[in-house]
Image 1 (cartoon, helix red, strand yellow):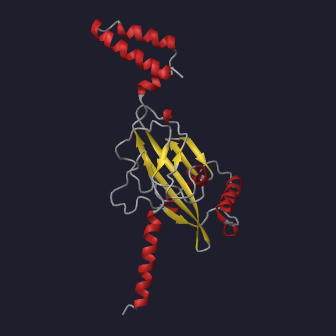
Image 2 (cartoon, helix red, strand yellow):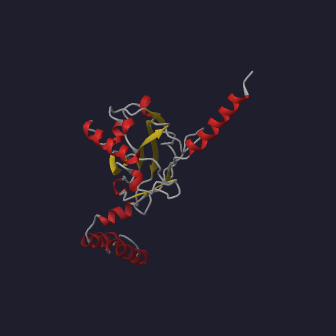
Image 3 (cartoon, helix red, strand yellow):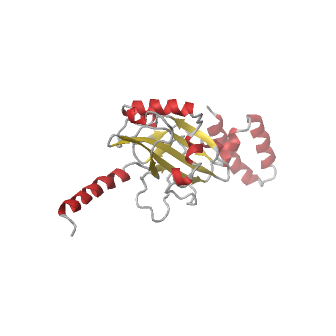
Length: 247
């Protein structure tokens, strides 16, 4: 017979662990879609012991953890966390975590930022990559992109989406949360992937051309069109040139 005390303890553990696991977050803009069957989109992929030898258990608070992380990062000659977190899926969790890299591509945000679903509440580094190019990095994302509360949503910026090819690219978010639980230190790994449709090709093309080349190509292109269509497109073209050329 199962004792009442045991049942109450089990219920207490579940009650504490469910909100804890669900309270960490995911990439909201661009939106990361989860693979079918994912129970908690906000959960970490894996929780493991720190993989770098050091005085982790002696680190005091978030500042101490970040300071030790920076020290050991340099000592281990680590340039980015993506290389490490993608090096061993058995240890650091599957590629893209619980997110679906084959989801419908999303348009890149036009505000030069990426937005988390909530505030980051654990010290530790994070990175954003577009395919193989790192476009954002910080060793203490909690301090850099929030105030340590879940209510203040973390906005990562600046993020330059211009390197995303016209045919699209893969947005990758990595976060290594330095966690302290019951007096013991852990690493929590987060991985989000969002396929992007690529930036507006016309904008990217216009910005890369000089004003003279704009005019030459505009004239050359217009000459091959009927007069009425030339006039309509000429008006549209000039408005777009003003929009993209003016500082």
